[in-house]
Length: 152
Image (cartoon, rainbow, N blue to C red; front, side):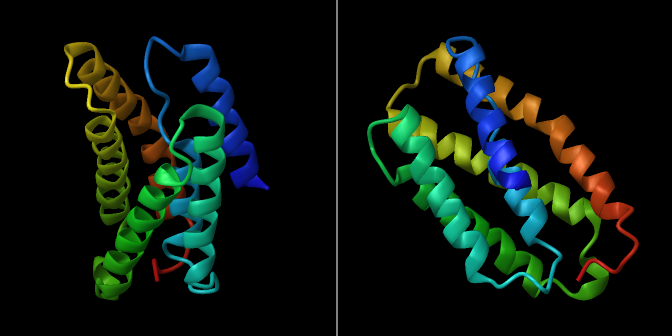
């Protein structure tokens, strides 16, 4: 339910701020938080959720259906693989922040490249998107830190 709310919130914010900046991928960051560090979550579930959320986003905002979903599915697979291959003592909130920030940056840069727009305005929108994602990532990192369990 949280992921649906995040997707709708991201959609609403994108409609409000269209032309000013791109909203951060709230749905993806929420999915990353729900997936990484939880052994009870089947590995395929987040990949399918990322794909579905991305396809819905594409149907709402872009013309290439499935592109955002594919990018998100690959990104969450890579982030999950890095987390799973990291030894248990290394699975810290700092690693989660690095994974979330790099995933957010990768999603934004790939979209910018695929748009084919290299103008200063497009780069400014990407920069604002990345900067607005930081508070959300830090809030989730604090939630991971104070979860009270090992970060397996």
